Image: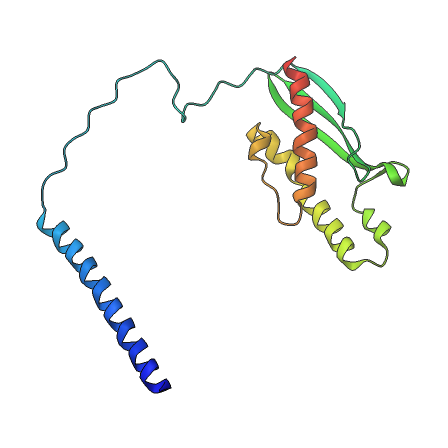
Length: 174
């Protein structure tokens, strides 16, 4: 009895596949036989509205040195930055993350010491520190925090960097 059910199932499956492929072939034949030229579309008329590809003109930055400090996040980390603007361009951006739960200890190349025996956190700390070292240079080159991509393993520091630098930039726009 099982043999007949398996045989019947296979037969039904084969018919289903054959039926579907005939429809697909018919559609392909219809497309090939229908060689009509597509009708041209009308040219869009110019409008005064910006298109999605238009980039807004960035607001000019005022020359000066801007110091900002973020509030501590839920884990107790806060960030400080000093950003210098000359001729409307960012010329330097110094920043540091601090740990308010550890007497405002800076997050630097030695910070992994706080995770003594936790290999996972030590690696994460190293990755964040090493990955974040290029953020300032990319910012100065591109003049845009959105173009400062996170380095693999350093997403946390990338978010902290962008947030604090944007705070300073906003101060330079006021």
